[in-house]
Amino acid sequence: MMKSSSLRSRWAAGVGMALGTACAVILAAVSLAPGHDAARAGIGRCDDQPVAVAAPAPATQPTQELNFLAMGDWGEGKPAQKTVAETMARYVTSRHARFAGLLTAGDNFYVPVSGTHDPVWQTLFEKMYDPIRLDFPFYVSLGNHDYDQKKYRWELAYSLEFPQSRWKLPSRWYRLDFPRENSLLTVMMLDSDHDFMTANDWRQEREFLEQQLARPRAPWTMCVAHHPLFSNGLVGQNGLLQKDWGELFKKYDVDLYLCGHDHNLQHLEIAGWKTSFVIAGGGGAHSAPIVRDSLGPFSRAVYGFAHFQFTPQQAIIRYVGADGQLLHEFVRSKAGQVRVTVTTPSDASIAKPLQVLQGIYDKIHPSTRPATRPGSETGDESYMPPAR
Ligand SMILES: [Fe+2]
Image 1 (cartoon, protein in one colour):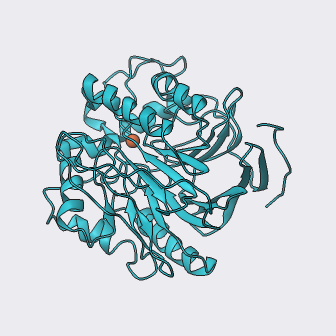
Image 2: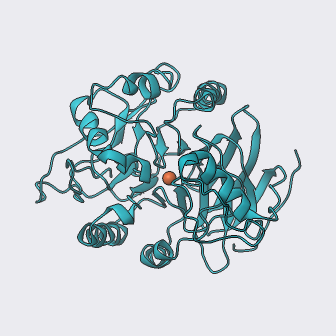
Protein backbone atom coordinates (compact mmCIF):
# COMPACT_ATOMS: atom_id res chain seq x y z
CA MET A 1 0.00 0.00 0.00
CA MET A 2 1.40 3.38 -0.84
CA LYS A 3 0.61 6.78 0.42
CA SER A 4 0.17 9.81 -1.72
CA SER A 5 -0.46 13.43 -1.05
CA SER A 6 -2.71 16.02 -2.54
CA LEU A 7 -3.94 15.30 -6.03
CA ARG A 8 -5.32 18.63 -7.01
CA SER A 9 -5.42 22.02 -5.46
CA ARG A 10 -9.20 22.29 -5.89
CA TRP A 11 -9.98 20.11 -6.65
CA ALA A 12 -34.20 16.32 7.77
CA ALA A 13 -35.24 13.29 6.55
CA GLY A 14 -38.01 13.91 4.30
CA VAL A 15 -39.85 10.78 3.64
CA GLY A 16 -42.91 10.21 1.59
CA MET A 17 -44.58 6.99 0.74
CA ALA A 18 -45.94 5.82 -2.52
CA LEU A 19 -46.39 2.49 -4.16
CA GLY A 20 -45.72 2.54 -7.83
CA THR A 21 -45.77 6.29 -7.94
CA ALA A 22 -43.17 8.78 -6.98
CA CYS A 23 -43.68 10.94 -3.98
CA ALA A 24 -41.46 13.89 -3.36
CA VAL A 25 -42.65 15.40 -0.15
CA ILE A 26 -40.88 15.99 3.10
CA LEU A 27 -42.99 14.56 5.88
CA ALA A 28 -40.72 13.75 8.73
CA ALA A 29 -37.12 13.92 9.70
CA VAL A 30 -34.75 11.13 10.48
CA SER A 31 -33.27 11.59 13.87
CA LEU A 32 -30.44 9.84 15.61
CA ALA A 33 -31.36 8.57 19.02
CA PRO A 34 -28.68 9.76 21.43
CA GLY A 35 -26.53 6.90 22.56
CA HIS A 36 -27.86 4.53 19.94
CA ASP A 37 -26.25 3.39 16.74
CA ALA A 38 -29.34 3.40 14.61
CA ALA A 39 -31.09 6.27 12.98
CA ARG A 40 -34.73 5.38 12.68
CA ALA A 41 -36.70 6.98 9.94
CA GLY A 42 -39.92 8.65 10.76
CA ILE A 43 -41.97 7.62 7.82
CA GLY A 44 -45.04 9.53 6.88
CA ARG A 45 -47.50 8.64 4.25
CA CYS A 46 -48.39 10.73 1.29
CA ASP A 47 -50.38 10.13 -1.79
CA ASP A 48 -50.29 12.96 -4.24
CA GLN A 49 -50.46 15.92 -1.92
CA PRO A 50 -48.23 16.96 0.91
CA VAL A 51 -49.84 16.49 4.29
CA ALA A 52 -47.05 17.88 6.38
CA VAL A 53 -43.75 19.56 5.86
CA ALA A 54 -40.92 19.55 8.33
CA ALA A 55 -37.98 21.60 7.25
CA PRO A 56 -34.62 20.48 8.55
CA ALA A 57 -33.24 22.45 11.41
CA PRO A 58 -30.42 24.83 10.59
CA ALA A 59 -27.05 23.45 11.45
CA THR A 60 -25.97 25.64 14.33
CA GLN A 61 -24.32 22.98 16.45
CA PRO A 62 -23.47 20.08 14.16
CA THR A 63 -23.02 16.60 15.47
CA GLN A 64 -19.32 15.91 15.69
CA GLU A 65 -19.18 12.76 13.59
CA LEU A 66 -21.39 10.70 11.32
CA ASN A 67 -20.49 7.35 9.80
CA PHE A 68 -22.19 5.52 6.96
CA LEU A 69 -21.46 2.46 4.90
CA ALA A 70 -22.34 2.39 1.20
CA MET A 71 -22.69 -0.31 -1.41
CA GLY A 72 -24.43 -0.95 -4.67
CA ASP A 73 -25.09 -3.92 -6.95
CA TRP A 74 -25.40 -6.65 -4.39
CA GLY A 75 -28.51 -8.87 -4.24
CA GLU A 76 -27.42 -11.69 -6.53
CA GLY A 77 -26.95 -14.38 -3.90
CA LYS A 78 -23.45 -15.25 -5.06
CA PRO A 79 -20.55 -15.99 -2.69
CA ALA A 80 -19.14 -12.51 -3.24
CA GLN A 81 -22.23 -10.95 -1.66
CA LYS A 82 -21.77 -13.08 1.43
CA THR A 83 -18.09 -12.20 1.61
CA VAL A 84 -18.75 -8.46 1.38
CA ALA A 85 -21.53 -8.72 3.95
CA GLU A 86 -19.32 -10.51 6.45
CA THR A 87 -16.43 -8.11 5.85
CA MET A 88 -18.72 -5.14 6.45
CA ALA A 89 -19.85 -6.62 9.74
CA ARG A 90 -16.27 -7.20 10.85
CA TYR A 91 -15.29 -3.73 9.68
CA VAL A 92 -18.02 -2.02 11.68
CA THR A 93 -17.00 -3.94 14.77
CA SER A 94 -13.36 -3.03 14.29
CA ARG A 95 -14.03 0.68 13.85
CA HIS A 96 -15.56 1.11 17.31
CA ALA A 97 -17.69 3.89 15.86
CA ARG A 98 -21.40 4.43 15.66
CA PHE A 99 -22.79 3.98 12.18
CA ALA A 100 -25.92 5.92 11.32
CA GLY A 101 -26.83 3.70 8.43
CA LEU A 102 -25.93 2.11 5.13
CA LEU A 103 -26.77 3.78 1.82
CA THR A 104 -27.51 1.47 -1.07
CA ALA A 105 -26.73 2.62 -4.59
CA GLY A 106 -29.30 0.38 -6.23
CA ASP A 107 -29.52 -2.95 -8.05
CA ASN A 108 -30.65 -4.39 -4.76
CA PHE A 109 -32.12 -7.58 -6.18
CA TYR A 110 -30.98 -9.36 -9.32
CA VAL A 111 -33.16 -12.34 -8.54
CA PRO A 112 -36.95 -12.34 -8.89
CA VAL A 113 -38.94 -11.08 -5.93
CA SER A 114 -42.48 -12.36 -5.81
CA GLY A 115 -43.74 -10.22 -2.94
CA THR A 116 -43.03 -8.93 0.53
CA HIS A 117 -42.98 -12.48 1.95
CA ASP A 118 -40.65 -13.93 -0.65
CA PRO A 119 -37.84 -15.87 1.10
CA VAL A 120 -35.23 -13.73 -0.65
CA TRP A 121 -35.94 -10.96 1.84
CA GLN A 122 -34.51 -13.19 4.52
CA THR A 123 -31.73 -14.88 2.56
CA LEU A 124 -30.39 -11.92 0.61
CA PHE A 125 -31.06 -9.13 3.07
CA GLU A 126 -32.21 -9.74 6.65
CA LYS A 127 -29.89 -12.67 7.36
CA MET A 128 -27.22 -11.80 4.84
CA TYR A 129 -26.37 -8.57 6.68
CA ASP A 130 -25.80 -9.51 10.30
CA PRO A 131 -28.61 -7.86 12.26
CA ILE A 132 -26.43 -7.70 15.38
CA ARG A 133 -23.30 -6.08 14.01
CA LEU A 134 -25.03 -4.15 11.21
CA ASP A 135 -27.84 -2.88 13.41
CA PHE A 136 -28.70 0.29 11.55
CA PRO A 137 -31.07 1.34 8.78
CA PHE A 138 -30.32 0.53 5.17
CA TYR A 139 -31.51 3.53 3.18
CA VAL A 140 -32.29 2.26 -0.28
CA SER A 141 -32.10 3.69 -3.78
CA LEU A 142 -33.27 1.87 -6.88
CA GLY A 143 -31.29 0.53 -9.82
CA ASN A 144 -32.24 -0.75 -13.23
CA HIS A 145 -32.53 -4.34 -11.97
CA ASP A 146 -35.01 -3.21 -9.35
CA TYR A 147 -37.27 -2.29 -12.24
CA ASP A 148 -37.10 -5.85 -13.65
CA GLN A 149 -40.59 -7.27 -13.24
CA LYS A 150 -41.35 -4.03 -11.37
CA LYS A 151 -39.64 -5.38 -8.27
CA TYR A 152 -39.38 -1.86 -6.92
CA ARG A 153 -43.07 -2.12 -5.96
CA TRP A 154 -42.23 -4.91 -3.50
CA GLU A 155 -39.21 -3.00 -2.26
CA LEU A 156 -41.46 -0.06 -1.44
CA ALA A 157 -44.14 -2.29 0.03
CA TYR A 158 -41.66 -4.17 2.25
CA SER A 159 -40.54 -0.93 3.83
CA LEU A 160 -44.14 -0.03 4.57
CA GLU A 161 -45.22 -3.47 5.77
CA PHE A 162 -42.21 -4.07 8.01
CA PRO A 163 -41.30 -0.77 9.63
CA GLN A 164 -39.22 -2.61 12.20
CA SER A 165 -36.94 -3.88 9.43
CA ARG A 166 -33.68 -2.12 8.66
CA TRP A 167 -34.95 -1.79 5.07
CA LYS A 168 -35.93 1.84 4.43
CA LEU A 169 -37.39 2.79 1.07
CA PRO A 170 -40.22 5.22 1.72
CA SER A 171 -40.34 6.53 -1.82
CA ARG A 172 -38.46 6.32 -5.08
CA TRP A 173 -36.73 9.56 -4.15
CA TYR A 174 -36.50 11.18 -0.75
CA ARG A 175 -34.41 13.35 1.51
CA LEU A 176 -32.57 12.48 4.70
CA ASP A 177 -31.00 14.79 7.27
CA PHE A 178 -28.63 13.47 9.92
CA PRO A 179 -29.35 14.12 12.69
CA ARG A 180 -32.73 15.83 12.68
CA GLU A 181 -31.59 18.71 14.85
CA ASN A 182 -28.46 20.60 14.00
CA SER A 183 -27.91 18.39 11.00
CA LEU A 184 -24.45 17.62 9.77
CA LEU A 185 -25.40 15.84 6.54
CA THR A 186 -28.20 16.11 4.00
CA VAL A 187 -28.64 13.10 1.72
CA MET A 188 -30.76 13.15 -1.42
CA MET A 189 -31.73 9.59 -2.29
CA LEU A 190 -32.56 9.68 -6.00
CA ASP A 191 -33.79 7.43 -8.78
CA SER A 192 -31.57 7.63 -11.86
CA ASP A 193 -33.51 5.01 -13.85
CA HIS A 194 -34.56 7.48 -16.48
CA ASP A 195 -35.34 4.85 -19.10
CA PHE A 196 -37.93 3.19 -16.89
CA MET A 197 -39.58 6.39 -15.75
CA THR A 198 -42.17 8.55 -17.40
CA ALA A 199 -41.13 11.98 -18.60
CA ASN A 200 -43.37 13.45 -15.96
CA ASP A 201 -41.72 11.42 -13.19
CA TRP A 202 -38.30 12.48 -14.38
CA ARG A 203 -39.34 16.12 -14.41
CA GLN A 204 -40.95 15.89 -10.97
CA GLU A 205 -37.90 14.27 -9.48
CA ARG A 206 -35.65 16.99 -10.83
CA GLU A 207 -37.98 19.62 -9.45
CA PHE A 208 -37.90 17.88 -6.09
CA LEU A 209 -34.12 17.78 -6.17
CA GLU A 210 -33.84 21.46 -6.94
CA GLN A 211 -36.46 22.43 -4.35
CA GLN A 212 -34.66 20.52 -1.64
CA LEU A 213 -31.23 21.76 -2.59
CA ALA A 214 -32.60 25.30 -2.43
CA ARG A 215 -33.96 24.74 1.08
CA PRO A 216 -31.88 24.97 4.24
CA ARG A 217 -29.41 22.13 4.26
CA ALA A 218 -26.81 20.64 6.53
CA PRO A 219 -23.18 21.66 6.01
CA TRP A 220 -22.57 18.53 3.93
CA THR A 221 -24.74 17.47 0.98
CA MET A 222 -24.54 14.12 -0.71
CA CYS A 223 -26.64 12.77 -3.57
CA VAL A 224 -27.13 9.03 -4.04
CA ALA A 225 -28.45 7.15 -7.06
CA HIS A 226 -27.60 4.14 -9.17
CA HIS A 227 -26.03 5.43 -12.37
CA PRO A 228 -22.68 7.22 -12.60
CA LEU A 229 -22.24 10.59 -14.27
CA PHE A 230 -18.66 9.55 -15.04
CA SER A 231 -16.97 6.18 -15.01
CA ASN A 232 -13.85 4.37 -16.14
CA GLY A 233 -15.90 1.22 -16.51
CA LEU A 234 -18.07 -0.19 -19.24
CA VAL A 235 -21.01 2.08 -18.52
CA GLY A 236 -18.93 5.13 -19.35
CA GLN A 237 -20.28 8.64 -19.17
CA ASN A 238 -23.91 9.60 -18.73
CA GLY A 239 -24.56 12.85 -20.53
CA LEU A 240 -28.18 12.99 -19.44
CA LEU A 241 -27.33 12.92 -15.75
CA GLN A 242 -24.43 15.29 -16.28
CA LYS A 243 -26.87 17.78 -17.76
CA ASP A 244 -30.10 17.24 -15.80
CA TRP A 245 -28.57 16.73 -12.37
CA GLY A 246 -25.05 17.97 -12.89
CA GLU A 247 -26.05 21.58 -13.29
CA LEU A 248 -27.84 21.36 -9.93
CA PHE A 249 -24.81 19.75 -8.32
CA LYS A 250 -22.76 22.71 -9.50
CA LYS A 251 -25.34 25.37 -8.67
CA TYR A 252 -25.91 24.10 -5.14
CA ASP A 253 -22.40 22.84 -4.36
CA VAL A 254 -23.22 19.17 -3.84
CA ASP A 255 -20.17 17.74 -2.11
CA LEU A 256 -20.43 14.07 -3.01
CA TYR A 257 -22.26 11.83 -5.46
CA LEU A 258 -22.51 8.14 -4.59
CA CYS A 259 -23.56 5.57 -7.19
CA GLY A 260 -23.03 2.03 -8.42
CA HIS A 261 -24.07 0.34 -11.69
CA ASP A 262 -20.45 -0.16 -12.60
CA HIS A 263 -19.54 -3.20 -10.55
CA ASN A 264 -16.29 -1.93 -9.16
CA LEU A 265 -14.87 0.79 -6.92
CA GLN A 266 -13.95 4.23 -8.25
CA HIS A 267 -13.08 7.68 -6.92
CA LEU A 268 -13.25 10.29 -9.63
CA GLU A 269 -12.43 13.99 -9.51
CA ILE A 270 -13.47 15.70 -12.72
CA ALA A 271 -12.05 18.98 -14.01
CA GLY A 272 -14.67 21.70 -13.77
CA TRP A 273 -16.70 19.86 -11.12
CA LYS A 274 -16.49 20.48 -7.38
CA THR A 275 -18.41 17.31 -6.58
CA SER A 276 -16.40 14.21 -5.69
CA PHE A 277 -17.74 11.11 -7.46
CA VAL A 278 -17.80 7.80 -5.59
CA ILE A 279 -18.69 4.53 -7.32
CA ALA A 280 -19.25 1.72 -4.83
CA GLY A 281 -20.68 -0.97 -7.06
CA GLY A 282 -18.77 -3.83 -5.47
CA GLY A 283 -21.55 -5.17 -3.27
CA GLY A 284 -21.27 -8.71 -4.58
CA ALA A 285 -23.01 -9.00 -7.92
CA HIS A 286 -20.94 -10.15 -10.90
CA SER A 287 -17.78 -8.08 -11.28
CA ALA A 288 -17.10 -5.70 -14.15
CA PRO A 289 -13.74 -4.53 -15.44
CA ILE A 290 -12.20 -1.11 -15.56
CA VAL A 291 -11.74 -0.37 -19.25
CA ARG A 292 -10.27 3.14 -19.20
CA ASP A 293 -7.80 4.95 -17.01
CA SER A 294 -8.49 8.45 -18.26
CA LEU A 295 -10.22 9.56 -15.07
CA GLY A 296 -8.72 9.48 -11.63
CA PRO A 297 -7.52 9.09 -9.07
CA PHE A 298 -8.76 5.56 -8.31
CA SER A 299 -10.50 2.75 -10.18
CA ARG A 300 -10.36 -0.94 -9.37
CA ALA A 301 -12.47 -3.88 -10.43
CA VAL A 302 -12.87 -5.43 -7.01
CA TYR A 303 -15.66 -6.27 -4.65
CA GLY A 304 -16.04 -4.08 -1.61
CA PHE A 305 -17.83 -1.15 -0.06
CA ALA A 306 -17.31 2.45 1.02
CA HIS A 307 -17.21 4.12 4.42
CA PHE A 308 -18.20 7.78 4.70
CA GLN A 309 -17.11 9.63 7.83
CA PHE A 310 -18.30 13.20 8.25
CA THR A 311 -17.24 15.83 10.74
CA PRO A 312 -17.95 19.55 10.50
CA GLN A 313 -14.48 20.15 9.09
CA GLN A 314 -13.96 17.26 6.69
CA ALA A 315 -15.29 14.11 5.10
CA ILE A 316 -13.16 10.97 4.92
CA ILE A 317 -14.16 8.40 2.33
CA ARG A 318 -12.62 4.95 2.55
CA TYR A 319 -12.84 2.15 -0.01
CA VAL A 320 -12.61 -1.27 1.60
CA GLY A 321 -12.10 -4.46 -0.38
CA ALA A 322 -13.98 -7.67 0.22
CA ASP A 323 -10.94 -8.97 2.07
CA GLY A 324 -11.06 -6.01 4.44
CA GLN A 325 -8.08 -4.19 2.95
CA LEU A 326 -8.20 -0.41 2.83
CA LEU A 327 -7.75 0.18 -0.88
CA HIS A 328 -8.17 3.93 -1.11
CA GLU A 329 -8.94 6.84 1.17
CA PHE A 330 -9.44 10.51 0.52
CA VAL A 331 -10.16 13.50 2.69
CA ARG A 332 -12.37 16.31 1.45
CA SER A 333 -12.54 19.65 3.18
CA LYS A 334 -15.67 21.75 3.24
CA ALA A 335 -13.96 24.11 0.82
CA GLY A 336 -13.65 21.24 -1.66
CA GLN A 337 -9.97 20.46 -1.23
CA VAL A 338 -9.33 16.78 -1.89
CA ARG A 339 -6.35 14.88 -0.50
CA VAL A 340 -5.72 11.22 -1.19
CA THR A 341 -4.28 9.82 2.01
CA VAL A 342 -4.12 6.12 1.18
CA THR A 343 -4.30 4.37 -2.14
CA THR A 344 -3.38 1.25 -4.04
CA PRO A 345 -2.68 0.97 -7.76
CA SER A 346 -5.63 1.49 -10.05
CA ASP A 347 -6.39 -0.94 -12.84
CA ALA A 348 -4.84 -0.14 -16.18
CA SER A 349 -7.02 0.49 -19.18
CA ILE A 350 -7.64 -2.51 -21.36
CA ALA A 351 -6.69 -2.59 -24.99
CA LYS A 352 -9.89 -4.00 -26.45
CA PRO A 353 -12.89 -3.03 -24.35
CA LEU A 354 -15.39 -4.12 -26.97
CA GLN A 355 -14.05 -7.67 -26.76
CA VAL A 356 -14.64 -7.58 -23.03
CA LEU A 357 -18.11 -6.24 -23.63
CA GLN A 358 -18.88 -8.98 -26.11
CA GLY A 359 -17.51 -11.60 -23.78
CA ILE A 360 -19.78 -10.48 -20.98
CA TYR A 361 -22.72 -10.28 -23.34
CA ASP A 362 -22.08 -13.77 -24.64
CA LYS A 363 -21.84 -15.11 -21.12
CA ILE A 364 -25.10 -13.55 -20.02
CA HIS A 365 -27.00 -14.16 -23.25
CA PRO A 366 -25.44 -17.30 -24.80
CA SER A 367 -28.59 -18.18 -26.69
CA THR A 368 -28.38 -14.97 -28.67
CA ARG A 369 -24.78 -15.51 -29.74
CA PRO A 370 -24.66 -15.35 -33.52
CA ALA A 371 -23.18 -18.16 -35.53
CA THR A 372 -20.78 -15.70 -37.08
CA ARG A 373 -19.42 -13.36 -34.53
CA PRO A 374 -19.19 -9.68 -35.51
CA GLY A 375 -15.65 -8.50 -36.03
CA SER A 376 -14.16 -8.39 -32.59
CA GLU A 377 -10.94 -6.76 -33.63
CA THR A 378 -12.59 -3.60 -34.80
CA GLY A 379 -15.60 -3.89 -32.60
CA ASP A 380 -19.22 -3.97 -33.62
CA GLU A 381 -21.23 -1.38 -31.85
CA SER A 382 -24.47 -2.97 -32.94
CA TYR A 383 -23.93 -5.20 -29.93
CA MET A 384 -25.92 -3.85 -27.07
CA PRO A 385 -24.19 -3.79 -23.72
CA PRO A 386 -25.59 -6.11 -21.11
CA ALA A 387 -27.82 -4.78 -18.39
CA ARG A 388 -25.57 -4.20 -15.38
FE1 LIG B 1 -27.23 -1.43 -12.75
